[in-house]
Image 1 (cartoon, rainbow, N blue to C red):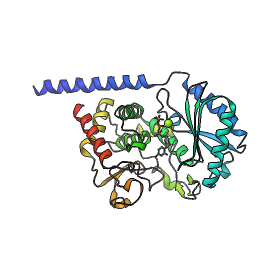
Image 2: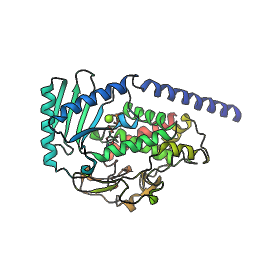
Image 3: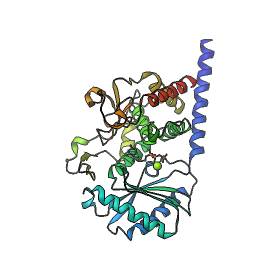
Image 4: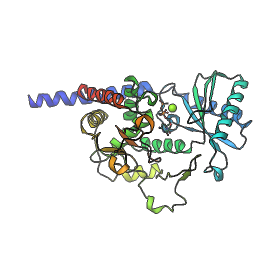
Length: 346
Ligand code: CTP
Ligand code: MG
């Protein structure tokens, strides 16, 4: 019976791999999706040029990372066109004014089904719905960190053929279980993808490398991706991005032959049973587990939702940002129940 059980299990995992690949395929956008997004991007750029002639709209989010499923929104940010000015701070009042101006231009264009200006939000944005494509689009101001972290995600997704299907399946699972909404106390899609990358960095042997660590010592600091955000803070956004060279070099490392099915089971087991929610922090910057103590996230603070740090995930560039801080106690308990149920269901 031991052999029989092993056979059942092998069949099950193989079937899971096939099912996961089928889900991945079913989520893919249609073939003309990319061209449609580029065309919308160009139309919006032309409209924005009339109020911000020295600025360019850049894409970020899933359109850049390669993780957009059917009908995903288009995330755009307005950046100074001249790279020399990209690190210059733009005061929040000016961001708010720009948001109002852009919203007006979009309304006057007659091309949008919906336009909402949110100049007073913590991150001022214009939210749009395009009439022609039906796509939704958010335009924010000077969010260079998001542009860079989306490119970081894209590099990781290109490094191993299992990364994208795994990330799609986990994002899809989180959406179906309604645990991917920071406004209601669960991790963002972005945070789920960071968890997937971290898991793939910490399998044995590792499936993904640590791009922020590779050759960082060989790059003079001035050339490394030093970024200043609109509030004047500075971030080291260096990461190794020569995917082709790295893929070639990775061929020489010990291979991890795990199938997609095995990785899915492993991912849910990690957060159902193995991860130490009390003490640990996931960090794709280091490809390791950090401690809450070292990050100073072990004390209750008087900040956002009590800053309880119940499920700690370090942002790769904004190191003081715990992407799990959106969770309060009931939300974290609910999420852990969903993870455990999934892991048992296998
Ligand atoms: N982002 C961020 N910090 C966060 C949340 C999001 O920097 N706390 C940025 C990231 O660059 C991310 C982008 O915003 O890639 C979009 O986030 P999100 O909507 O969570 O991810 P998508 O992959 O775009 O999800 P979807 O396909 O569902 O739109
Ligand atoms: Mg998005």
